[in-house]
Length: 152
Image 1 (cartoon, rainbow, N blue to C red):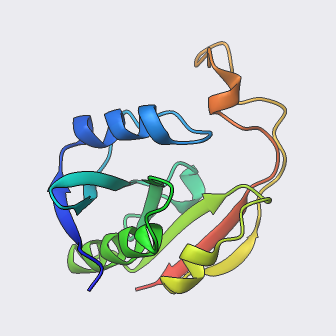
Image 2 (cartoon, rainbow, N blue to C red; image 1 turned 90 degrees about the horizontal axis):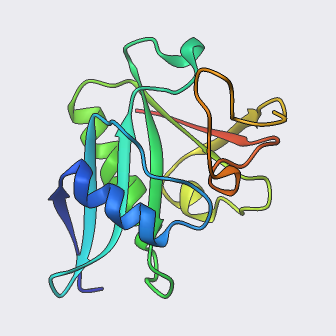
């Protein structure tokens, strides 16, 4: 047994963890639910799930894993977080789940959780816009993203 346990957490706790530990994304401002992964009572990973960011995917039956973040050295932590998020989404009535990675990320944790690569998004010059300025461009990577899907 790995000594890791799935725990319920609030968006505030998940956002704080993402703010402190995620390599390239800022925390989400909203979500449907968050899941934590603890080792000996210490939070070592989080996942947040919400409505799909892309309007075309926001059909009421699709959930998007918007953030998944684990401390380095936590073996299989991301896979456990993705799997727990999928179980919860399925229990809530969602029929599919999607998420995105940067092209340089392997997707090993997603494959382990049953996701399959579904394609690549179009490149964006920037996520900043006059109506939604992004102050930290390094936390909003532009360019193509790999889209992953799992039917529940």
